[in-house]
Length: 633
Image (cartoon, rainbow, N blue to C red; front, top):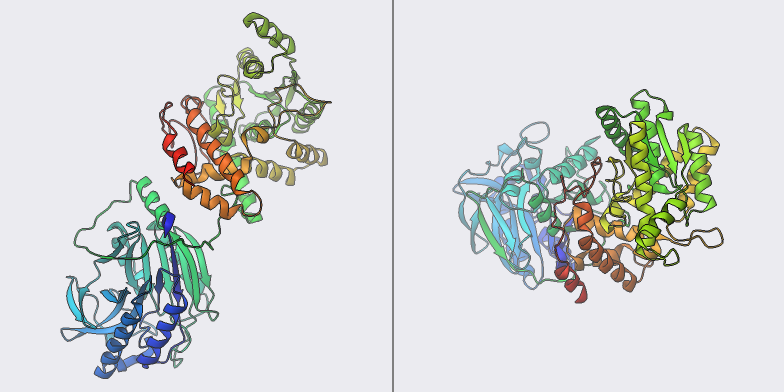
């Protein structure tokens, strides 16, 4: 429960139809066996069985179900757990299909089913009445509790954990009760269900639950009836699902274990809702019942990718790369067209970012039905340029059919150093940035001379860290890579290598991928790159990981550190993770002034740093709170 993680599970014990005592025993066994689970959800009519038919109208069964519930309530005392179980319950001469919410030796409330299926193999209206419109109170199992659909259950210790309940058919309806629950504040929906298996139904059910969790920005636990139900006309497979905001976190396929467990991140769900201004809160008419759970450290089992910007599946990754390339190219084509640019000028270094920008420019010219020769690729060697990068730049340009030229800026840089009194032997920030600014000067004036625009090459990761020379490579007339993080840049260049039409193009792209990331602003050593970016600012895979959870999720430093420990376990020590996380925050806050005046560039993903779009931050904000939190770890 710390950091907003709630261990949840959908559990379908084997039962006996109409044997309430036996079913209660199995439920209690499951509760005790999974005592580490804070929210345990059982199927519809889990105390009686869904397939009792007209036995539901027998007082003996109703009394047996209530007595069985009393046993479950008593067993819940001392457990750090909320349990949701299903039973029939009569109110004022009408019978309702209910879910009982139990915690700490108490019954918190009864939620009746709203939509009763009465088609095909289902005939619930024969025995049951839909949930009443007006909520009320009833006495059940010795407790006077709320009875109605407009009831939510909130954890005092974790206020972001707010539970809403619906039952089976409710989620299949055009407007499920969970829609109202979520708008009233529910971050987690429990569904006690009895959905029989038919061909193709499992896939539809999976999509339904995932989509509902996405629409409601919630966690959704769907627990289905399983073995032990009557097979007179139907078979139940205990297809259980735990989903969160569109992603299925855990699932047991039909006719397997009957148990699915994962952790819901209610803190993240709260954050998603704060960002989403169309998610309008409305708790009119709702009762909120509070309960207590001890805040415990929840062990993580859910997948936490080390590369959150990059799909793990190869086919999805290829689709993502192609889509982003199309987005970048279309944005650039529009800008070239609008500016009536005769040329697209790119500084080509033989590195990853300028390679990607060039590939995008070629696609843009193709969209405009223009010759690739209208792209002016300029290499500008100076003190740190190596033969490898210079050669790769020329081969790449030749293979892509663009115009290629070289401007050796060494003399210009020396003249500039003489103007400002910079000693060429002093390899300081002036030595480095002077070269970067001269390169930008050459590109800008070349664009003016040829009636073109300068295409920026810097990526999202560099913008986050401020790893760009202000008014040097920081500046352009359109930054095509501004929304692409470094970890994704690599895969996009790899994708272009995979689809390359010539062997030479493929080989040069692969060699560019294999080249250490460097601005090449310090003198080479024995012809090799001496200045490697990741040795200076840290591994980009860590910084992209941190960037994603800072911007996309709004998590605090302690939570991000914990996720990094879990994701990168065995690859980086805790000390290294913490060191570069502190470095990330220092640089991210200190370098905002560079992001406040960024050139235009296309947004391609959910994380971007455009000052006109998704990220607006004062340039002189302090990182003290964030760094102080890390000092306590």
